[in-house]
Length: 315
Ligand code: DHB
Image (cartoon, rainbow, N blue to C red):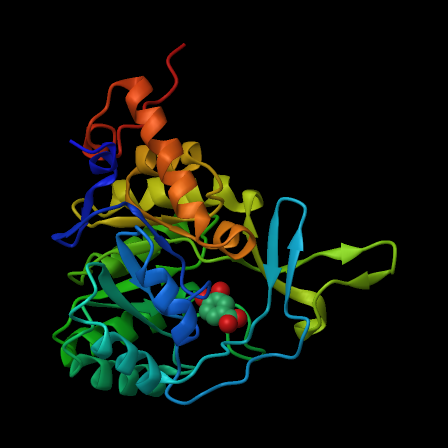
């Protein structure tokens, strides 16, 4: 048995060779980037959140590395839905990874149009409906509006036969976890991905007295180590509130130990964003090997042996 077998998992019943995948937005905007991802040993691949038409995105600089993470306000630069459907169709046969299409319409009608079109594409296995892009001026994140999320999901499931997943913003209050969970429970979701970047953070450079990114007066989505505790809390909460629904963990994954912690909180799969941006695709091999080493030390042969098994501290 190859040690790599230790990383196997499943998502919505689809068997995956690895519990690691990219986070939407990182290394998945162009065909070149996507082709490179196809050559790595990840279990699933998600495309850049797309709109119906090509978008240039926000003015540069719109991404910055910061000491323990990243801040971005990309503004949904993407090549439009058709481009990503074509890519997935062209690579359907030589692709042993689960193909996930991420969509992020700028309003409900655009999301409905995206869903209708994606629904007809055989190569799309799961649609990740992004309810949490923080970077479009004047467009609040749908995931913070529970009624709007409910209405959108109802229409989405009414019109679309394909599996639909959601990417959520981070929640911070107990009542918000519960309100969102009561909406999500109504629908047979393929998975729930927790969390998107913590929106509207501000990083500044005191040497220059200025912001480090340009759009939205320097405000952008925070990623990396800063957000791991929030990500773990969201994974844990939704894992316990949404019994039986697969959780995809995202936030602060730099090492195998971070993946281990996400899985312990209940994640079936994890998405890697900031570290993939900073280190490139080599991070998957490194992080996978680090996780294998931890599992071997602890005597686990399968991630299901510790998935969700977080214990409360005993005094
Ligand atoms: C963008 C950022 C996000 O966090 C997201 O979920 C979708 C899009 C962006 O700015 O492009």
